[in-house]
Image (cartoon, rainbow, N blue to C red; front, side, top):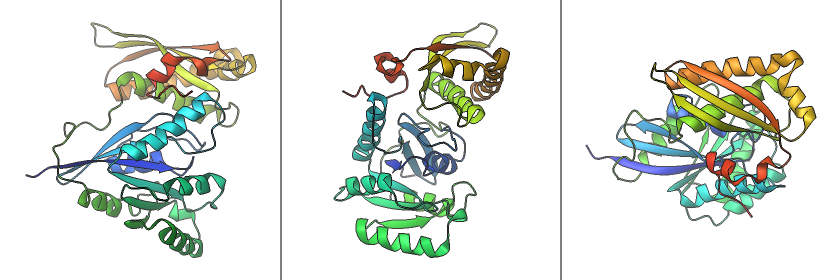
Length: 297
C-alpha cells in the first residue's frame, strides 16, 4: 500500500479551539484544553491516521500580540510551525467577531506560500447568517483550497475535514508507528496535565504567570513512577491561591493530575507538587527547552 505523510500547521488566535480540533482529528486527547485563551504554549504534534495517510498535526500556540519573552517565544513557534508545514490549517472562532488578534494573523497569512485550508470552528454556537458572511470574506481575502464549517466539540464536520486533509497529503513513508498519537515525551505530557488541572480548578483566579518544572522523575522497579514537579508563579499572592486553605487546593490539583498522568502512562504514579515563587521564571532557558520552545531574544 502506498503511504502518504505530511505536516499540517494548525494556527489561529487564542481560544479558537485549535487543541480541541487536533484532539478530535486524532480521535484521542493529545493536547490540553481549557476555556481560557493561550492554553497551548509549545508546538505539540498530534498524529492522525486516515486510510493510507498519516497526518501530522502541529498544534501551535495562539497568535497574539506578545508582551514578554515567553509570549514572543510562543508566537515565534506558531509562525515557525506555519513556515515548516506542508499545509496550513487556519482555525477561526466562528462565534466571535474578527478582532485585532485575528486581523494580525490574517495579515501574516496574506501571500503565504503553503496551501491553506480554513476551518470555521464552533459553528454549533454561531449564527448562520454570520457564518456565511465570514466564510465569503475569508475566501475572497485568502483564497483557501477549501473552507470547512465544523464544531470540534460536537464532532460535526470533523470527519469531512479529516478526509480532505488525507486526500491532500503527499506520498511519503509514515514518520511514526501506527499506534503513536503524539510526539510529546512523557515528561512533557505529565507537566501539561498538571498545568491543565491548574487552569481547570483555578479558572480566573490565577493569571497565566505560572509554569510546571519537572524536578525529578524515577521509574521504580515495582513498575510505578515517582514524579516531583514544581509549580512556578510570579508572586506570593499567587502561591497562596495555588495552595488554597490549608493546602487543600494544591492537594486537589495533585490528586486529579496524578490520576490523569497515571492513565496516560498506564501505571501507578506518585506525584509530589511544590509551589515556588520566582518572578523571573520565564527567563530560565532550561524551562523553554523542557516545553519545546526556542529562546526568544
